[in-house]
Image 1 (cartoon, rainbow, N blue to C red):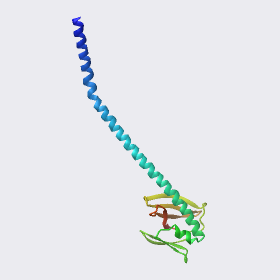
Image 2 (image 1 turned 180 degrees about the horizontal axis):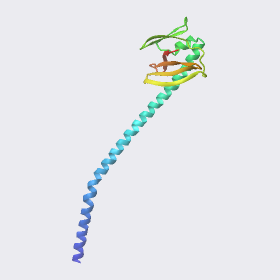
Image 3 (image 1 turned 60 degrees about the vertical axis):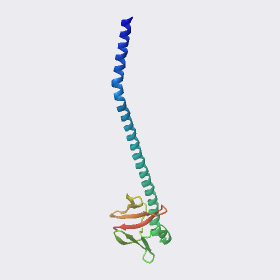
Image 4 (image 1 turned 90 degrees about the horizontal axis):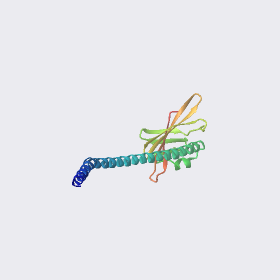
Length: 172
């Protein structure tokens, strides 16, 4: 009986020693790795959310500026000065006498005649360039059988958050 008691105590001591030495040492490492993984996953999710928000804002800005652009072209063709002035920033001057738009841009002042003979059949979307959260350029073109004319519509966000027409550059 005494031998079995000693053997039992010895086996219990061996078991406790084996369990406590290796498992306890690795437990903090596993917890630390799990904590770092959770922080990394949280950071990745925040970056993804920020990217998604930025993309949604850009899509909304594209939609709004495209709508204004179509209305601007229609207003130019019908000489609707009231509409042109209502959606223009302070950097735009509408010459009713000459039917031109005078854009006061960073590159200098440009005078562009009202666009005429533009329809969805000869209009092409070329791109959208957000310069920052409050300034964008919408790139379009009028396409003919023998060439095209690039149209760069500049927009700026008003203090109220609306997009305003801020300039037009063309090579045609």
